[in-house]
Amino acid sequence: MLTRDAKQMFYNVAGLLMTVNGWIYRTFRAAGAVKKTPVRLHLGPGPKAYLPGWTNIDANMFTAKCDIWLDLRNPLPFPEGTVDAVYSHHVIEHLPDPGNHLRDVFRVLKPGGVYRVGGPNGDVAISKFMENDHDWFNDWPDKYDSIGGRFANFIFCRNEHLTILTQSFVTELATRAGFAKVRKHPPITGTDHFALFADCLAKEHERTPEAPHTLLLEMQKPAREPQKRPET
Ligand SMILES: C[S@@+](CC[C@H](N)C(=O)[O-])C[C@H]1O[C@@H](n2cnc3c(N)ncnc32)[C@H](O)[C@@H]1O
Image (cartoon, rainbow, N blue to C red; front, top):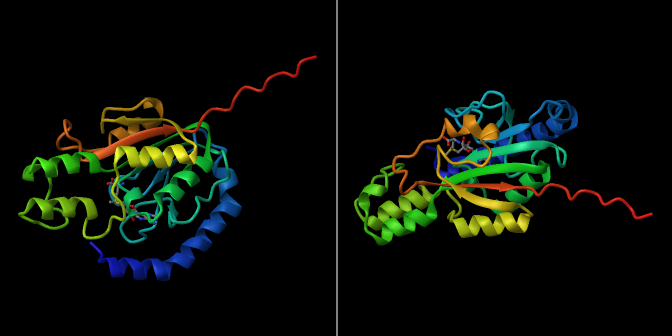
């Protein structure tokens, strides 16, 4: 795993190139890309979770398998209201402003479009810390014996993670961005939109389904109100 300094250096050097790449995509390719149906974006697939049929977006040009090389701290290179579904799994905790990210996802989604978003489960981690349950926490990226060390390792991941994801926090950010129907689901099995996310569920993993390590929420951009016919 890259150190935080090395990662910062990568974003300093590659950031401008990714900004230019985003501009090129937005200007020359996005209009063609949004003609296919459904339009589905997978943010941060990494090396193992590439989803065929989705537009996979990642900043890591060395290890991730992706279709568009982009920094998700920049706006998504798609026009407003053109995307049917967005999926990210263990990505938004790496972003400095998750509220801004949710507003941008809201912008690109069509009315009725859905975002399924997962990340380290702060709610369960806090309970497991209070219960002194060492076994729930894993040894990645570092191995600690103390419950505090194991908790910090999970939440901050050697300072790769910039925030703590809890249901109430993400729900507040999502609601402020304009989303409705913000609902928690169990990883692998739970969705209100199986037709959209079936292939995502197949990529998800969970060692303890009764106390999930991943907090997974789905949220929907409200459908447009039907236009009232003017009274004659
Ligand atoms: C922990 S991995 C998750 C990979 C995969 N989604 C999974 O669940 O196995 C986080 C991924 O998000 C990507 N990522 C993190 N910050 C990003 C950013 N600012 N822009 C684009 N991708 C980013 C990383 O490159 C990495 O591939």
